[in-house]
Length: 75
Image 1 (cartoon, rainbow, N blue to C red):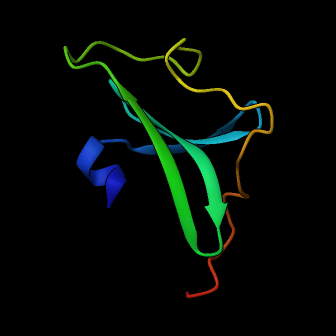
Image 2 (image 1 turned 135 degrees about the vertical axis):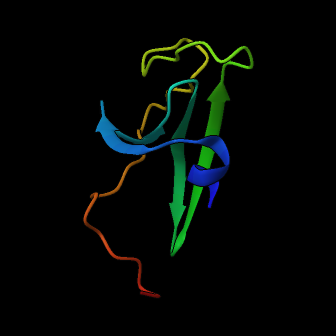
Image 3 (image 1 turned 135 degrees about the horizontal axis):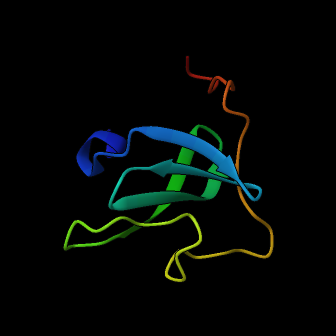
């Protein structure tokens, strides 16, 4: 749902963190609790390109991610 709202079309593991990435928006996994994934959103309101290495994207000491093929227990 959140990927559609932010127009993020790709899910990628980068530097130990899972991201949903669009052209001007990026969502980073903050925490995975059971079947719930908490995301951090960073975007350029002017529609300019955003990089995985943008300084506004939060970097945790313990990066959060999950295997891309993983099924949540409710599926």
